[in-house]
Image 1 (cartoon, rainbow, N blue to C red):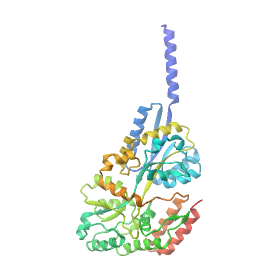
Image 2: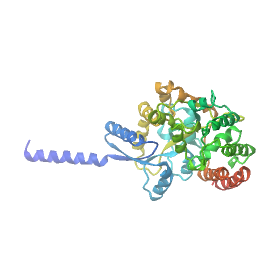
Image 3: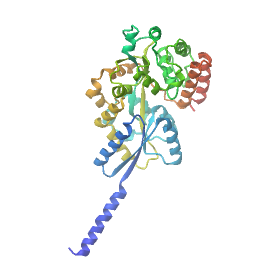
Image 4: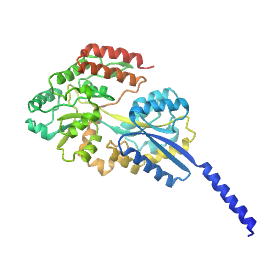
Length: 405
C-alpha cells in the first residue's frame, strides 16, 4: 500500500471516528438529593451504563429538594431542562396538565410493567397513562426508644393516641420529652395528617378540601393538647423532620414518626441506640402516609430513546437494590422485595405491613398551595395564635381556591 493510500485510509478512519463521536448522545439527568450517597450512586450508574452503551453519555446533576421544583419550572420555561428528572409524585399532575411529561406506555412492554409493585406504580399513572416511575418509596411509622420508655415503666409502645398521652405523662415525670412533633418546613402538614387519618378524616375528597372536619378539629386539638401538657419537645415550630430525627438519634425524645431511612442513619450515627418501630398510634382506624418520588421523561427531550434506555437500566434489580438499600427506602420492584436484605429485615417489614392502610398525597393540581395552607394553619395553632376549627376552616378556603386549577 502506498504512503498516499495509507494517508487516505487514516484520514477516513479519523473522519469516521469523529463522526461516531459526533453521534454520541448525552442524556441529562436531574437527581433529587436524598443523602450524601445520592450523587455517588448516580455517577456510578452513569459510568456502568456508559461502559455498556458507549454511544450514550449520562450527565448527572443533583439538586436539593428545597430548590428542585423551582429549578425545574425555571429550566422548562427557558428550554434548558434535563431529559430525565426525579420529582415529587405530588407534582406530577401539574407537569402532565402543562404538557411537560412524556407518556411512558409506548416505551414499556408488559414485562417491564410487571417489574413493579402495583401500589407504588399506581401513583405515577394519570388518566390511564403512565407518566412517572417510582424511583423511591417510603411509608411512615413510629420509632420509639426502648430504654427511655423502660425508664418510665412502659413495656410496649402505645397503640392509640390516648395511650400515647398516658405514656407521655409518665415520661414527662422522668424529665423525658415524650413525643417529637414536627412544626417547621416541608411536611409540617403531613405530620398532622397522621393524626387526621387515624381519626377517620381525609385531606381532599371529591376535589375539595376535607380536612376542616370534626375529625380534623379533633386531631389538631389532640396535638395541641400534647404541646400544652409539655409532652412534646419545647417549641415544635422550631423543629423540622430532620431536627426531630437528630433528637431521636441523640436519645432526647422518646417517640417520633418518620420514614424507613432513619434506620440507616441510626446504624451509622447511633449504632448503640436501643429502639423499635411500631405503627402510627390510632384513634378510630390505622393509617400511614405512603410516598413515592417519580422519575419522569420530559416531552421536549431530544434524546428520548437513549433516555429511556437509561431508565430501563436503572429499574433492573442490581441498580434498584443498590439505590434503595443505600438510601433506606422501601422496594418499588418485585425483584428488590425478594432480595434478602429487604425480605429478612424485620424493621422494614413493619413499614411494609402498614401499606394496606396507606394514604398517598392526592393526585390533584394545586397540591403544594394546599399543603402550605395546612402547614400555616397547624403552625398557628401550635403557637397558640389560633384555635383548631377556625384555623382549619380558613386553610380549607385557601385550599379550595388552589385545588383543581
